[in-house]
Image (cartoon, rainbow over all chains, first blue to last red; front, side, top):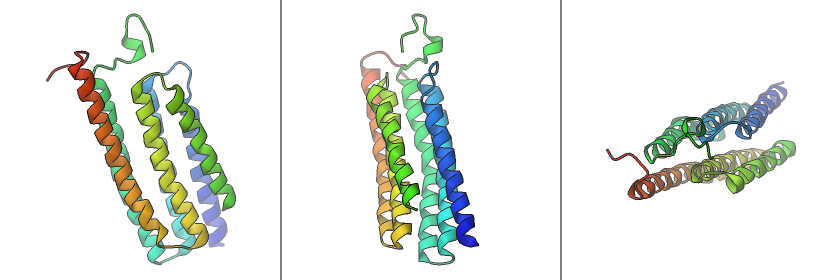
Length: 104
Length: 90
């Protein structure tokens, strides 16, 4: 029973990640849109797959390590996305919609 | 579980395409960051398939070092374009 549940949750996580890929290849969007989509969906996909993994192994060292990885990812992923976006903005990377000549 | 691993490996291709065609250098950095976080998940799934607990230590270390690398690349890129005079000086 637990195995079926864990497969469903892992499948859900994979589904989230596929949605993230769709968000990454929008036609009329620029970098700032993509990093918002990619980072958010990435973290959610990881959490879902992590929980699915943890269910497969019950209470053990394996589950403990998985939750440690999840902790690192939940803390660091948005942090890195923020730093990259701030670095891009500070270094004068103007998003396509604000530019007068509109080059990518 | 092999299907999950296959899908995850298949997911790396779009990120590689994003790194290749990314119009700006920041898109490439974003693509690289995504590939790094995908590899963590692949290690986790592979470790869960074989029940190898020690593999998860690699995932932890790779998670930390991958993110730190991306941070420093972003800082380098922003300094470089500020020095070229395109950015805002604090």
